[in-house]
Length: 624
Image (tube, rainbow, N blue to C red; front, top):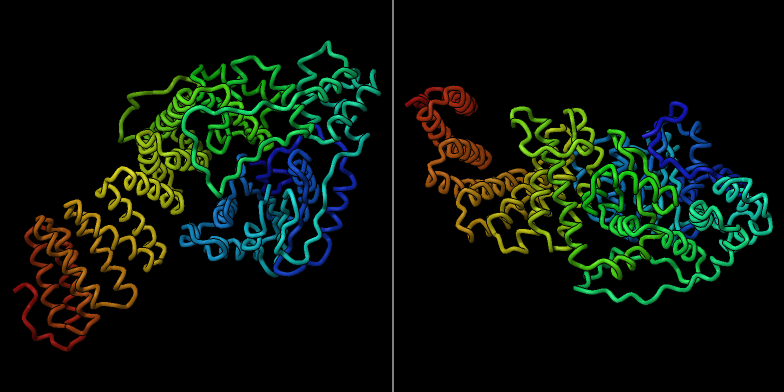
């Protein structure tokens, strides 16, 4: 998170150095000044991958930050592998940046009906903020986020026009001005080397189609080839052959319609520039770069990179910095504890996956993924132990460079890495070949996140959904029922009683089939709560009654007393007052047997209040 001129700013750092684009910056300013068309204020910047659209958007947003005193927000709406981020998830990320926590909105919903989108629209309607939505795939990701009658501005970068939203006149981004492209080369490579060969520099810029991403990759490569004449660099770029067809061994991961791998286009100067830079890498760094595509969100730091390749953390950190120097990784904002972070650029992801399939055996890839998951488990567990001193010392501390040292450090790390940790769970559960490690990471997160005091319901919902998926895949009905109960409780806490009831009823069936009477009783109690909340005390009484029978059989007197009170309340709603008084008396008797004096007095007060309401003070005393 950055603070620019006192403005709350979570935008990426942006490309440095930055050259040219004066016309495009002016066009964005003009477009932003036009009256809003349709539902809300939306500005679109369209350009193909590698055109520098994100860098330009960040540059412009910071140049107008003073017009948006409530902050600059950011959400990437696609993963580097082409995966589409839904509007609801984007809304929750933005709400989190705003510090908004409307409970129901934090649980996922469907498309435009997702309550997080409505909550974000309300929040934007009350603020003057600029929101950068990066790498938008389609209008369906943006439309639900547009607020009417607001001073907020949404700036979307995309590879093409956003069909389906009226009144949008996008700013189109092509190659850089030729002079600016040569200027950028000079700043990246060294002014003397470029200025001494202006013809070669011009040829090289033209070979890169004046596109910033290709220029940066070629510049990174040239810095490793100090004896290579700039004149020869363009010839080498033109001579790069197309990649050979890749034969991938082992099982192929099933295609996901929401995730479209975007390879480097053949004939694109970006591909040639990448090949030149990649071939210059030592074998160990090339392997690290390929395996970085396995990291959650394709974001890596020394903790995750050292696990992926199985090397010491300082060595991994130095390798990441060297890859970033070559423009093969992008610098991300540092983690909360100052750890440097990097990301695999989406424009290179497809080619790196191809190379990984060609050069890394499936068993090596699976081992790297397993090492990463186990590293994350140890990190989360160490954070939990620091946040909960009563849990005792850490029996398995991490090596010094990886260690979380204080409770504040642990909390900052957990909250800062929350999205990536959840992404790691989702990826592992989705692939289905490392359920053991994925399950341990889920358990660790469910124990640790609540200790921060900021465990978002949406995060807990995602984790319990993962537990459910693994349990169903493994044929474990008892664990699946427990996951459904937790999901039902989250929906109930958000007031979504119909959705909660569906999960509780499924949990009843699974728990009954597994012979889990305690789980079945808990699920039936949830069913009763749902019927009561939806105004059906008759069905609530039936569910509470069935749960009561199970609790009595189990000898769980605390739960028995609680269910007797619930039954009394349901009978009161049905105007069965005698039955209600009987259940209150039974509950008081159970509490008296267990020695729970405060509980008994509370139930006595409920019964007395009911008696007074009926005008029956002369009825038999409760203690009889």
